[in-house]
Length: 234
Ligand code: IPE
Ligand code: IPE
Ligand code: MG
Image (tube, rainbow, N blue to C red; front, side, top):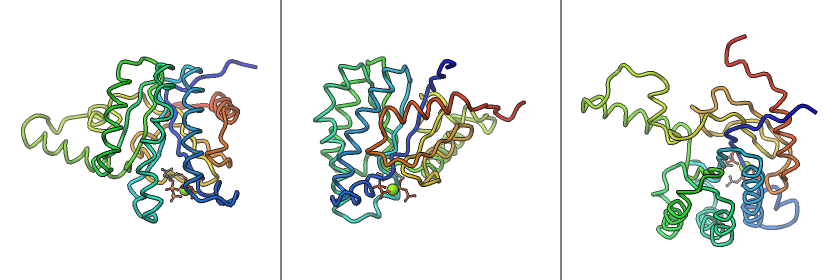
């Protein structure tokens, strides 16, 4: 078999936790717990493969609409996740970062996030990035507002290109997304990385996120390897 092309940056819409749990007669939160455990596995697999960045959609700006008990659990999940796995992530030289407006989360959660980011900031392996309270449209709006302010203050001009505008996005320090995977059979973007996905390869897997194992990841990378990326050229 020809050699795998390892994407530099993979983004995942980790969907299907609730349905995974329902199928087993468990509460939806049990699906989120199992889903979190799976992030750890997939992050370590990506790190071993030499992927540079893995961005995981964990909570959208629309997910606040869910019942309060589920939102409460999802707000607590970062703390539970890093209590269990931070040591292992560190041992694997993984750097953790976040996208989204974390100010809306409880103080406790924000504290965990700040600690984790600072404790892993010098790691040189995979950048494991969590998108929480993140929405693509919101990100573009915030970027446009900041750009407008900079122009008004004379700190920027109207004469910028796409790359320079990209510096206003939350992903400014990250490589382009080569591959976006959505699990659980839904074929939509759901407000994820609207700007960044312009030329990403998209793969939609029927497997629920908690069951999306390293084998499925490798299958997706194999499919990516066979895609012919043209970027509008020939
Ligand atoms: C994805 O799983 C995780 C989050 C959106 C937080 P869901 O909770 O959307 O699971 P389904 O889609 O209802 O099965
Ligand atoms: C997208 O999944 C958001 C995350 C995985 C965090 P949703 O389950 O919220 O998306 P929709 O509602 O099916 O579009
Ligand atoms: Mg869903």
